[in-house]
Image 1 (tube, rainbow, N blue to C red):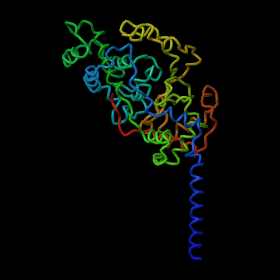
Image 2: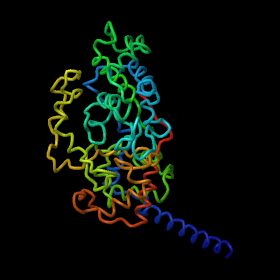
Image 3: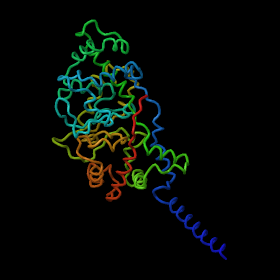
Image 4: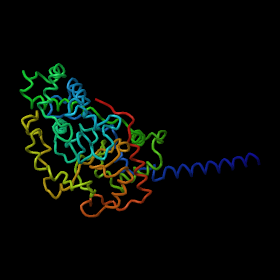
Length: 384
């Protein structure tokens, strides 16, 4: 009788265990549909692949050029007051941002510093995409009077004075005199900085660990994400439709969108103000300073040039390490991710921001999305 009683208790316990297991497996936070699994697979950082070619920069994969570029990136002498370097606005400790609403060089500018993570995988640079190469982007702030505030002649003299040996080892011969060939030296400095910056990529995050476990069927390692983060991931893939713009292993489609976010001062036209300059840019893919053949500038063949489509449109940034990159949007309009999602929910489906057509997200759903975004943080950056 006692044995039967014990057996009955064990049966009840086993039944309860199986019920809990069934509930866990059928929970929306842990059981993924085939569609969701396919989408999760596309987001894994393992899909990033090797650094893509950069046809317009023949030094893009040169270690010597990257070494020189890194030195110049951190060198404050490349500014009018000797106090500003590229790293002043792109600090490694903050995922190569500065955590300011708007970047501050010699003066405060109108937009935030963009993150540098994974830029090698992008087609367009700056918030408005006015540069079509990483090396051209590197040159802009140097001659901007509000940022570094120097000219190419000054850059050339600095190279002669401090980096002549490094330059000639990595990039070729210098002109006979500092006053000669300033633009060529200036361009090569930009290409060396780009060779360094393109090596900055994020490492795997807890999301990637979880995604690998799910895709590989490793049921013993599914605890990398909290329940709220898994719920946020489901919203990201589904109702929130975040994946429409934030897709691929860098969580960005690299394109431009108008999200009806108020500007901090005057109206910023975004991409509409620069779209027609891309074919004539001094340092564009089609310029004399580009190392690309015209047929390699494919990104210029399929531009959306309509002012309506580009009005107040800004580039979709990566969401990798987004939780440690406050504030947010092109001019730092929001102090935290909760404010971003609240704004998205309020403007969804209204006017020019109809790309955000997911409908209103509840407060709980917004919090779950924030929790998921935290899972995209990597404790380390890798260099190729």
